[in-house]
Image (cartoon, rainbow, N blue to C red; front, side, top):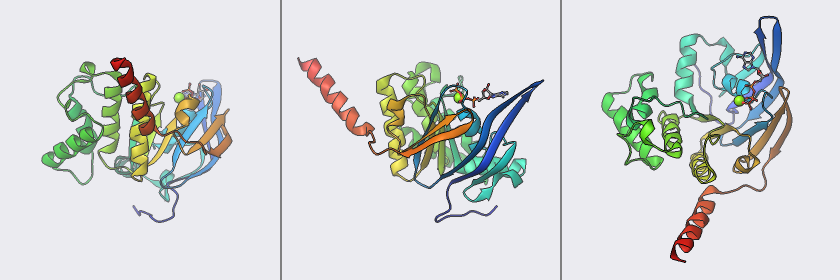
Length: 258
Ligand SMILES: Nc1ncnc2c1ncn2[C@@H]1O[C@H](COP(=O)(O)OP(=O)(O)OP(=O)(O)O)[C@@H](O)[C@H]1O
Ligand SMILES: [Mg+2]
């Protein structure tokens, strides 16, 4: 597997299409998407329900294959790879965050974060796995919750574990499908703050969201309709989560003192 660096876009899609066939019914979920995403971008994907956002994300994440068209991930044609190569590529380059967190219930925070490293190739020794998982949990501010099970944690904390899990293999690209869909405003700002930090450290992020307020933290906003891209713009007026958090904290402190 050759790896490209330098100016190769992280994602190159050319005339990508995905058609689902369910019995007699054919759904053209994605219809001819051409898109380039460069290293270091932070892209929001928006669009009405059913417009093909998740379908596109599944293809970007190599969880599903397009019906036609091309997908180059880091310059590598995904279609030509076998199952095993694909699994290795996914494990090495991609991190996933979902709306519903997707954590294992009977497993501690630490073990949840360790999980992706079990499938790493070459194998990572147990001690290194543990150290890295701890580091990732500390990075998302949960160093004091490593032994907790998901049910013993708030929604925002669970999502932060999911972010730690997405980070633990040091991916180049994080794919997130409505990561704040189940979170309140304050917790959403927290998660976006984490994403902005990750992005500042060089990780490329593609994130589906329904909310303009959340898309506003991204650098670029892509809009889909009926399986096609109908809008693609730089976000000139970015929100900055860390500053907003500080302002919120100050306001709360004032209210407490009053
Ligand atoms: N596995 C599948 N089999 C058949 N049809 C599917 C499948 N997954 C999605 N579809 C159809 O493809 C279209 C696009 O679905 P997709 O999940 O990509 O939309 P979305 O933009 O993510 O919507 P939402 O905002 O509701 O999550 C929809 O019409 C949906 O019914
Ligand atoms: Mg969806």
